[in-house]
Image (cartoon, rainbow, N blue to C red):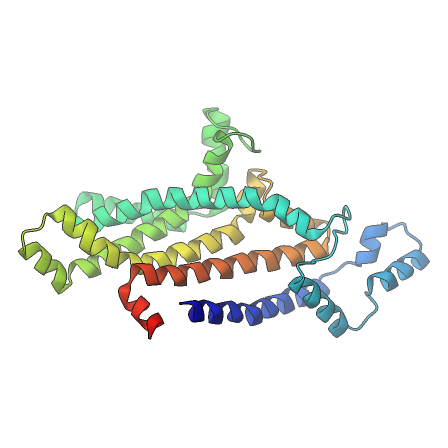
Length: 309
């Protein structure tokens, strides 16, 4: 297991280098002069030229990229053009809000999606199964930004049950979590149903039933554990996707997370914050996938046997 973890950690290096190259290239192609952004459009050309030299913007792009790469591995993403604060400090300040929103959305999706998938599989072609299938299709197809606006109109503007935006109480977390977690709930429902149907047709499930075990024991003890293998994969991917894809939700609900920070930085042409935010998000996404792979060994004995061999 330790050997496997070591290999996966080493694999993070080329992934992060590739992501950093793409982000650096895109930011170089985007319009705007960082020196002019810092000093303002009314600054003298001489002052802009001096600042460009101090910032190393006149160096070849290869030199600038390797300087950025070196800083990335030292967790030094530079300072913000907007307020001069270290980029890492701004990201760490926004990280708890995004983590809180992401895991609330995932928890909601798990509570709704997995039980719905299990019931749909055990009661295949029933009314519940048909309703859950249609609901999952609608949830998967609903745009996140449209759902966010509809939730605000219904529960904040019309009914006035929940706050429109901001943070501070558990009530502020309800609407963003629903808006962000609905698609994941739909994905979990469909994946759990599909995986459970496949497992329920296995020979060992028929053997367990033939031994006289109750249907509850067969479903929860024998079928569910094996059906969770692909579900765990999807959960890990969804956590990473939700963490990086919370930008629209955080913007609509004025949630002070990493996504909103990056949107504000893009508008302000704050290149260091944008680059650092993308690398930061990509690192978390890859780390979550590593945790999912490690979790396989504790869920599927066959995977553990491969690690030992």
